Length: 159
Length: 368
Image (tube, chains in turn green, cyan):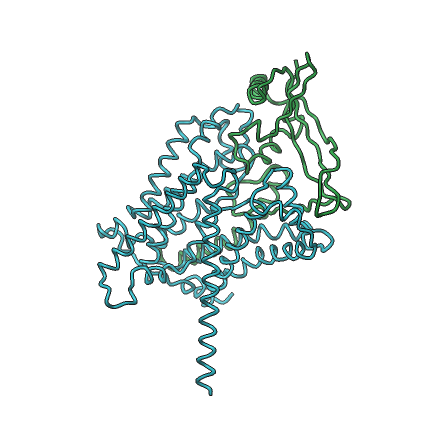
């Protein structure tokens, strides 16, 4: 490659990299992070709330109305074949708002219910997803969860 | 920016040798083929997902409505493996490297269409950028066939450094906006809790770190993280600084692996480009020792490559069998490889300190 071309390649990327970063920010704000993009994860959140720490918790709930039995499954138990690194983003993209969940067609809902039955090894006819926040407090050297507050509970399928 | 400084930065920052680049090429290919290949079984998982769960990120994957057939993803995977084998043996190295990068881009695009992007772009970018360094001129089939006689280039290392530096900056900058520098909050510790309790990443030193209650140490880590990530972009300006920050990166990833259980091994494929491979070559081949003839030097290189390959394969098998440790994250091989990386950094630091001491003693001896 000629020196002039190489210099142009560098000039292109010196201009392109900040521009695409701006675009990633805009698109990411309104939709989700674009791909491919020259970015690393920011982890900008500071998980502190009024002197204690808060963390998000998601559980699938398989309900058997006949016995009122509720079986909880963590996302990792529900999708053991999805890498752990992708799990929180997957949950956020597909299971964090009712509109998205209700847009699933019937076969998808049945697929999710069947998966819940298989993974829980329990009978059930209803499937919900429960989002909560766990607050951690106490002496920092022995910090423990002290309360759980439900933030959302969406029905995926109900007979 | 003055034009000559700009040109000097691009063309004179690095002066790699064919032998050095050849060794890095073989190392990178072995690292990828043994440890960084996507999980072949994951394609059937994607294929089994209902179309409603297909969530392509904004970009070229939006052209698709659903996950492609499993056979397509498997075919691209095979192409990826063949391409990296081409890189390993140095057969049509430039095109093999570009094919390796593009096929990884395609696979990652579909794998990330579950709604989560893993920031592993360097796995695709590194072989594409390095293909322009002519890293196939030595220890390769191309060399034997006399196909790749092009001069080796240093500018792709500058470009790779620029990409890494900028990507590091994008990791550090949001932290500043997010309040990481606020002394009243310890963001690193918050993330540790998040990983420990929410994602159940509780291996190695995670529990010790959760119980470790010294606020100023956590605050120091908040600041150090930002200085390291933002500073990397500045460090791109000089090869020495870049290498220093690559050393910091090894320590940074090692510490996040020990506490947050996040190893981020893919980045090491790119970091390894900044090892002084020409020195490694001279050390292995005994080039500095005139009594060793060239053919014997080459034999020593191939023996060393075989040892590294066997070590990698053995480590992978041992890790997968779960004899030593069983957690999914981090894996045993990540623990071993990152530990080795940190040991190398410590070794380099001791060596540099030793040389500086010797030099200063020599200067003061001359003065007296």
